[in-house]
Image (cartoon, rainbow, N blue to C red; front, side, top):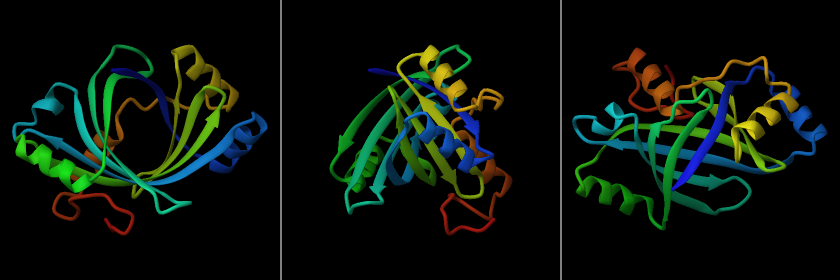
Length: 191
């Protein structure tokens, strides 16, 4: 079981961040179009416990390759940065993964798309994420809290407040405020 350590912030000036990444020796890695499906029991037992169960499909922009992964995220640990245990299993067929979870009693309760621009900066990942209707965000994921803070300062993001909510929580809140209009958040949807 791995430990996810990350900082998430709203991104206001993407060109400035990309310039800082280049000046700091960052390498643009991948552009990924994601489809994220979240599952839970009918009673939302995982959500109530602060956990998440996701099937994510990543389509890589520079190829026809795609990867699907089932992820369980444990409850958040008490820390200023977002920290939680997670387990991921790569699957060869997203539809079979969805059927498996359905057979175990889990239901899809949330779906959204995300476009991710992945950068590597030393031992950290810097993800520039765009979500329909919600805008742009940046996540810094690293091996330790101190490294995440260091990269945050290096990229001149230390004035940006942390966002503690997961993308799933942000999307769920947006969809709740548009109840009856949208049931998922995809790039071709309109509010």
